[in-house]
Amino acid sequence: MLKDEVLKLICRENDYISGEAISRKLGVSRAAVNTAVKALRDDGYEITSSTNKGYLLTNSPDILSKGSISALLPDSRSSELYYYDSVDSTNTVLKTLASQGAGSGTVVIADHQTGGKGRRGRSFVSPSGCGVYLSYLFKPESGFDKISDLTSWTAVAVADAIRNAYGFDSRIKWVNDLLMNKKKICGILTEASVEGESGYIDTCIIGIGVNVNESEFPSEISGIATSISIENGGKKFIRAKLASEIIKSMDRLSEDWPDSAYYLNRYRELNITCGSKIIAYPQKIENGQGRTGTAISINDDFSLRVEFSDGSTENLKSGEVSVRGLYGYT
Picture 1 (cartoon, one colour):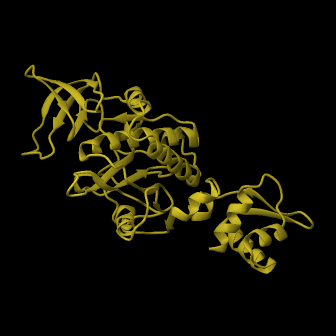
Picture 2: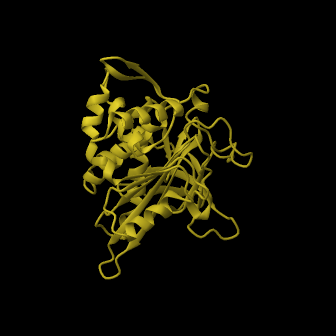
Picture 3: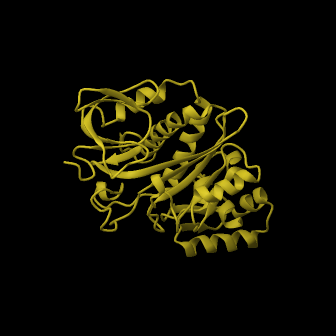
């Protein structure tokens, strides 16, 4: 869309850029550039125009679009970025693109999801104009036993992206919940398909949902969820900045996989589970019963070492844990 391309060029300039320069770079008429600028102003972008100077972006609204995100990424990255105003689920859209031959690093991002996915079949609330809902296609060429490592790496990557975008720290609850002030701001859902003969992961869809500008949540999750805005006095943030930083972090993850020790060290640094009283639930919960114990440490394979109340110890590779002081567990 021409509007996105014009926005990308104007965003990247610290000074005026002439309409002639824009039309030349994009191969369109000056009239088409003027029309695109008018459309951007209608969207809420404050763009100053000056005779013999051109256009200068003086203020940006919080609008997610391919143009606002691409402006913060290398030009080569735009071809693998798909933006939608609304979808059922970014994971579902990316699965379709993967089946059509999309390559590793392809990204789907949306302003709104009508059927956002959480773990264990739960829904992920995804209102318009509030969060960053993004799915990343990764082809790791590794065994299925590494899938939980990848989920933990992603938690680190998103925590780094939040810090790079806004300067705020978040913490990680095992396995991959990101928290601020002991409440959840981000969910991560990893869905993988395995190549039958080799047992290697064929494609991996990594879904990431971050609560950015929400001011309230439905009553059933208000005690569990928060947003970056709520935890910072109601200040609103430019979501395109975070979206671009998540893409950069995930690209670094893809390049580092599977040998970097950085993610394990950073995961241990950010994790709040160790040392806490917990209730551990296996993958298949029977009658809602869990086992109580104390989280001891994060192992080198990102599993959680737990000492249970009966004196036994176990390394948890999957499942869920409730941590005392979080999510209603007292």
